Amino acid sequence: MKRNQLLKESEWWVEEAIITEAQREKLLEHYPEKQYKPVLLTFAALFIGLGFLTFTASNWSYLADWGRMAVLLLSMSAFYVAGERVYKKKSARVGSSLILTALLIFGAAIFLVGQMYHYTAFSASPFLLWSMAATGLYVVMREGLFYYAAAVIITVGQIYSGLVFQDFYLWLGLLLLGGLGWVVYETRSLAFAGVFAVSYYIQALVLVFSGGYPYYWLIIGSMALYIADDLITQKGQTRIWKTSAVVFMFAVFFLQIFFLGDGYAETLTESSLYFFLIWAVLFVLAVVRSALSTTNYYWIDLLLFIPVFRFPSGDLFSLIVLFIYAVLWLVSGYQQEVRRWVNKGTAAFLLTTLAAYFQLAWDFMDRSVFFFVGGLLLFVLSYGLEKKRRSFRRKGEEQ
Image (cartoon, rainbow, N blue to C red; front, side, top):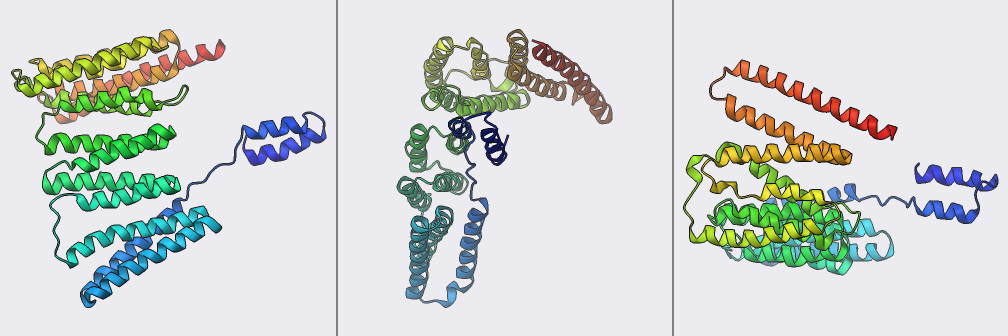
């Protein structure tokens, strides 16, 4: 029932002496008013910022240096001051949007002033200054809008560093971990944790591939976030970091089926030795944490962190591990009557079957026959799994 409907209905319940006024108030406490996110205002701020950038860029060459600085400083100051006053006296949403516009102008000013005085940055340092300003605004105002802005700026800056300079910019990585990571730990916000996880994995990809490290170092980063989830997740909350680590590693295993051939297995180098030492420590921690958990079945997820690249037929081992992973979740879900586990195992089983079919049949089967047989195979599997799932659901409803 929606809050507005409950407000009207509960008045009638009180009049009819079905409940007391105190009971009505207690009921309404369980249906808090929805906090609508200022999506339109956010886009309005973005469009205003883009409009300013477009106007400034088209008229930049006609302005003297002092005129350019005046335009940047006056416009930025005007939006900051107006946003601060509106935020405190009238509307927090409108005020935040105005301040976000000022933040966008500040970012544009960093690049425009550098261009004006012929300063060339050979790193992502402009993005560091910009993201520090966004992080500072969040610390001062505690508005989620600025947390998201800081995460986007940090992520875009790191991608820029990787593409342009083929380098991972350490300070942006530290700001993400020490700044935004601490905010997640402090607030326990699921939305913040999700945004952090997306930025974390993008930065991990930039670090590994721009630095020329072997791809398997992504396993270490994923395991670290998997274990760190216990620091931010309260009892009963969705485990965002654990879920993101499992999804990421499932994708890694899925790709290994196609790209991890016999030629990848390599001799134990100094780099891989360090990897296995760190991996062993993290894996033991994950196993211990899983053993201490009230739900003992989550050790199944740890199968996705096995370094199968060390085996001569890594692609085949990846396929076998994924099948075992899917079957274990299916069996556990049916045994414990947990629908979420059944759905998880079903999705993993279908994706693994699809990967196996592509890997084994693509090279020697006619393309039309390939897709026709593949469609029939998926249809039969989907029908069988769905029939089993519905039977499981009916059984649960009867109990």
